[in-house]
Image 1 (cartoon, rainbow, N blue to C red):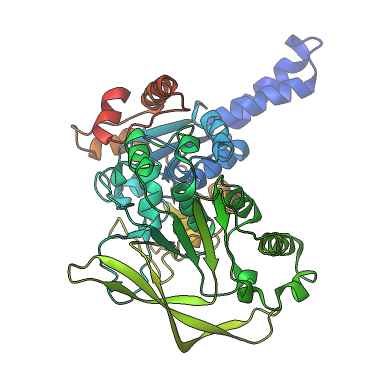
Image 2 (image 1 turned 135 degrees about the horizontal axis):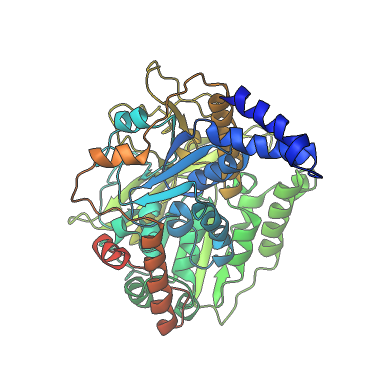
Length: 487
């Protein structure tokens, strides 16, 4: 067919096209021949940043492609909506890019469909040329220490989901009635949690924190918060931006332990630039420390400490955290080890928030999660012997583990999209897969599926409700209410 069409086109060019250049004619043929090619059907499971970045790249690089993004919630954007701190609205601007991707004619969003529950991985692979899994890391890691099941020991993941309006965390309960809290971990999430707890409620009311969460935070009695790390100041995982914001919280004083910084100033100048700037900011804050009579709350980072056990009363209520004091082994500027000693320290507190990382959940029997909490893969390709089914890929935290920031996720998603592109371009199959039209037949008829128009209905309603309250939006935190507004 292609050769006959080309002969017709070359015949028409000199006789009928007049002054039209052969270049234009060739472009016309290119469009014609492209339209005749097989359309590759790609399914992306998970509508977070990894899924959208991969879809963005694939639509740029491949013309004949249809992408269906399947999400278990009725709303898109995953970690951007439910993981980014409410007082970081600038980070959420990437949603504008994702919206443009979703509005392309060859990209479709289907919300309220859960992999492993409403549809199986095997069923998806029957009707697509490629299936990309990007549903993230939805479970927190445990410390594995004594009394970890005590009351008011909570996961940072759950706490973050709660103040961001995640439906699964809607009924989450936390007691903020005590004087002291301890956040175990020193990454960006740990600082986000600390900042939300210590920030003035009037500042938080300007964000999209749901009203029922604000009412709990407004009653908080916490005046003192410890940020506990097992290593030293040179190994903190939070960024300079996060620390700057923490140091600027109104009526909150940061209190460092001077002996935690022994020898740090001597090696700071030789550090790589990002680490150097972060270390210099900590040293500056340490040297500027002074008692401020206006301080209402205190932020207390401490280093060289590992949680050993939780101290509880007879009713299993948290009373404190026992810490093992660690000693540095090796040189301070050459990635030293921190080894436990026999020395102990106790922080008396009524709330402990565990912020030591996430791991992915296995939602389908055909999927394997490795010991590192991620799906084993080779540059995004999941090795699988089922040659008669669509190839499997993984991107984002499900494939890398919960590491890096959104920029890291973008780089990984682009890399995996390139692998998918290469495989689709070199694939030998000419069979047209049915895509979501066939998948829909396998889904329960009563399941309410939310398309992009449905999300726009939810989005419009949330923004309208937010305006009435003087905030960016008031999130719907109940799936059934989301479905009502969408459909």
